[in-house]
Length: 468
Image (cartoon, rainbow, N blue to C red; front, side, top):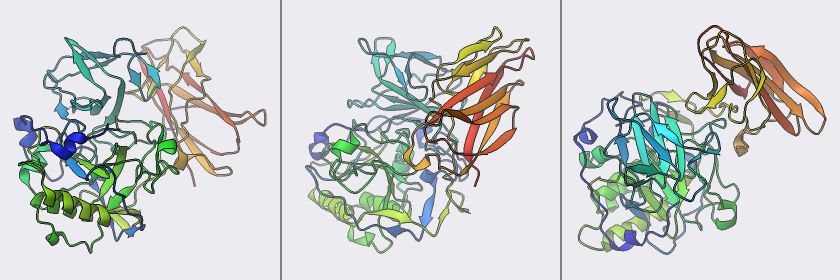
């Protein structure tokens, strides 16, 4: 969420020096890279065919709509294998650095830290570090440099070549309220410099509270919303919703070439609502450092009025006949995503080697050992209550072990209301699955992980999806 953006109304957008690598054009199929993050079939890189729309209109608010590369956007910083590691801590006097995936406060050491890293100057302090070596985008909220020490309030991560949206298991993968990295949907420095007819991906957008919905606060593909969304929101647009301009919208009526470019993008790809702001009907985000300013000579009434024209015409997408990915292939977005996480506290059950949860591995990790050890997780934190992914009574589900080094996974569900165990898969080897019927009304997950005992390190993770 961004504080009240008065600068959007009165000041030129901030322009920083771009770097040479930021302006290098990407190959057409170069997905999952710094210049073209996420997979070809990520919803960021895909577009709906024959979309249908709701009739709700984004309302006016205190300020004009905005397209901004200012203090409340973000920069994207490319890490190289030669960059040194950096340990990020919580700010002085805070509980520490909150890691959204394991839901704990602790320091994090980033393997490769670019010297050019500079958080956004606004109070959100966004910064995304893109590390192709590890295939990770590190996403920070309220990142600050204090001398040689870096601090932040919140840390999340996502795969560079992944979906660009969380799944219900790993439900928070970035600094935005919807759990996406701030880089998702961002108009990049090199894209803005190229001035194409339209940008070849969906855009990132925030709305203010009178536009955002209180119920539901979010919809697929989002897995979360702003903390106080149910209390503060009074509109019709949930976070995670895709908004577009109808095909009939006449972009030739827009006099500003950049607004025509935005409008053409909104007709093809649309924009996903990823966050809230204070007082601005909608904000579309541009990478900090882009030469991008709708008001280069002071307030531009024409641009402001044309943004209002776009606002009035935007509609929420309710469906589509099909989807086309970044390679032009027709596909159906997958909503049957992993529900299971290995997060939580693990206790020694037997043996002498303690396995611990590793967020980057999405698994319990045992160091090399020649003896078998077993750990158990009673925390019941293995499934997050994502509203559109709650288990359905009577439906079939399949759990599959994802292990290395001979590790094994055991998945159990205890129904607290019935006072009995409803699922016990026994120990599963890597790739082995068990299908069961969901019958627990008040489920408590108890997970077990067993090391391989082969003299090498072993990882134990799993996947839980609907089977029918």
